[in-house]
Length: 287
Image (cartoon, rainbow, N blue to C red):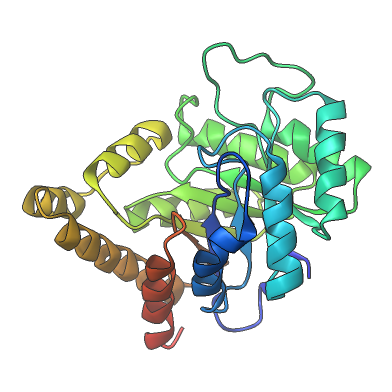
């Protein structure tokens, strides 16, 4: 099934992101995680390029293939391009196709010291290349508060329009903690003429160091309610996790009820308990 086929059928689709292990991948070691997450019946599951989120990995192709074949759930393989040549992308596409996967998320990838730009500098270029060389359903990333390298949200939305014009079929958003920021972003995107489905990306707070790292990387703002949670439960990891999941659940219910996002994409960090908790919140709200 193509990801675009899941939208517009009443109930708000909820999807998950997971990451493959580093090094040799043994499916039997992942069974507990996969069964816990797939058991919640997500609309689809996206798989990042590596445990660190960058660098294409054969484990992504293999894991998406397992999700498609053994669990009968649509899988989306991430592809990053900042260090890749067209030939690199072609080889990776062949791996993905061999595993029966036809949905991909085309991303530039994170710049890092020593990054060498080859045939692709931006995500839109990868989208255009994939749409011209494959029959894949191709998604792109978007940033509700603007990419950290953009001077303004308006400039970032211009880049989003470039991705749609290049052929992007859907968008998955980076994490955010302020729903008002997402609502503003969607309004601006639609006013700019962007019509592709936009899923809201939600990452429950699982720890202070994790939150600090992600906020620094993504440029997401922290509402006062999140700061209060961190201050109150900084020395109590269990309570911090519970409060973080509750906050994310409230975000999700408000978003799903508003009709603004085309779906909800939850960054699970490979934790089935997170997937189960957040899916239950959506369904208990009747959404």
